[in-house]
Image (cartoon, rainbow, N blue to C red; front, side, top):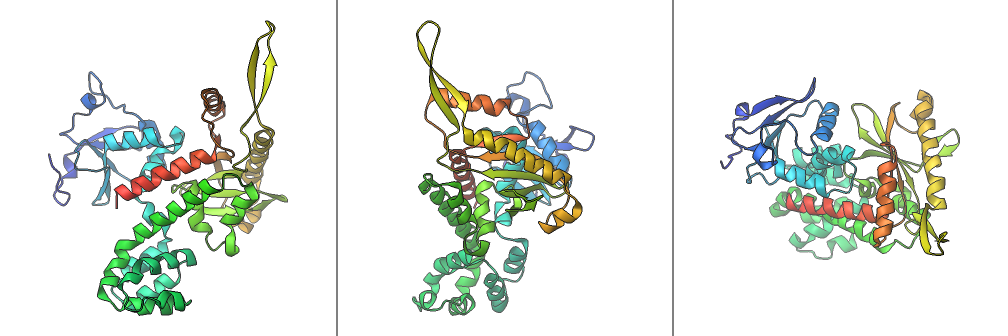
Length: 388
């Protein structure tokens, strides 16, 4: 059937219980077992366990699955989430992440524009867009990086082409543009495109600075007294929020702490190393039979980073409420520790060893390369562009 979103009857979807608290709903016209290659009906489908875990943390969400191709990937209808199962599985297959983050990334990238702007910015821009002065006031609260892009994208409507160049005050410059009614409409339409361009700039920055050290990357995150930090920390994933940099616990400073689940106070801890650091060190070994082989061992940079980040995790989880209040967070659990270091190598043996260490680490410890980060950002940009 071809779905008319305003007429769809979600009550006809079949409810299937997956856990004590979680029920998923399925389109009665969809032949899911045939699509999945099952001989008979089953509740199982790829990445369903991850989805259940995600919904356990987001109990207010109701997910309805369909196979209707008119659903590009996701639609929100009457507060419910209508998902094309084929696109959900495809996304989870493609994303550079362990299973534990895929469902969150899937839903996160569809509501990504809500996370790119702070909630107060969304409220002001969308709810107050009919009032010129309120638009100016709201946009004036944006960080300078976003302001610059707004003016750049909207300046085509003004008769004074030099307005944005000659006037450094955002509110005054914007007033020269906002009087045109077309601009008022274009604000809402152009914000997602502006944010995608920002993500593209971040991706380009990473690609062009893979020869730099970790201090250079961290200084970029903190540039101009950290006024760009919120948007630049999106490089780590749109599923993460509330980024804290250089928080001190027991005289030790972690690199980056992000929030993954606001309901359960679950956090992800990042240890940032250099893009030019090696993941492995290699040495040539002479075998007993006189032959030679190459031995891969974790580099000294990785070997130092692992106990370091695990120590930060211990400090965080044992910290007092007063200590945590100083860095602006509540007591919670570090659900994942990520060491970001180096680049992937186009070598089958290197890839084999890398996959081996990733699969043998505990579920709470991961190694990401900057190549992974760039690839993940590319997937995010592509999905955002397709869902504008």
